[in-house]
Image 1: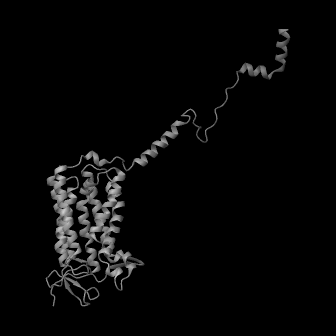
Image 2 (image 1 turned 120 degrees about the horizontal axis):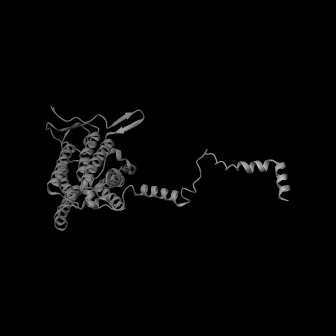
Image 3 (image 1 turned 90 degrees about the horizontal axis):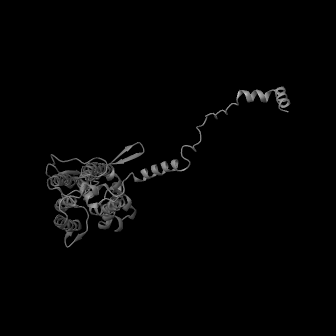
Length: 337
């Protein structure tokens, strides 16, 4: 009998009338909000313009979600393309299944597009948002708790996770290693490490992001060994373990090479971008002002509505009198003749 364990939620969906609120989706959304909030603060502190991170996220987040789903579906094809698989379930993102490697890769492509459009160096942006990304991963892992998925081997430790019969591998309720909790705590530690190292060593040119990647892959490697969910294996090892090894090596190599070629941080002036975010609005305002000044100026402007026309000058009194008395006109003509 298990005396202590972490309970799983009885359901992963809350209903507000006809509107379903899925715990997994809420965790993803909350993680994105945290990443943008922290990334914005760090970007401004480095000399960037306010609002930049939000504009980059408009591109990076959708790309990241698509990339994460594609990686999961490709590397775990059984539920979708295998025997008794349902290809349509590949679109059911709310049921879980986002591969972090695909999310980082394709999300990076989206961020690169956005940075290029704004004239912002991608490595500097990556450094600013790195701690926020790993915090978003930490928050997102609680979505696995709501879905009762991606847990580890069976165990009776006091912090074991209780999985009900509908989600247990053998159809019998039991307790398992809460790998979601392990990764949550690991990601918090990586975020603190990146924040400390960035402040201590003034990391720039993508090195803070590379440190996050290297730190995360170390934790993912040992946590992956504990998981019992379906996964592809290569040479007796889970595919995600091989990916973690390769990505870790690439991140460490980048840190070393970048530190030699580009010591220190970027010039804050380069973070402003060659095309400010409000340039379109400013151009429109300038064009509007130019249109008002170019034709006619103030003298040609129409009078305001409702203004009365100026009264004509009145004729002199003598002229008016002469014009209005015929007898005087005849007398003047007789005298002159």
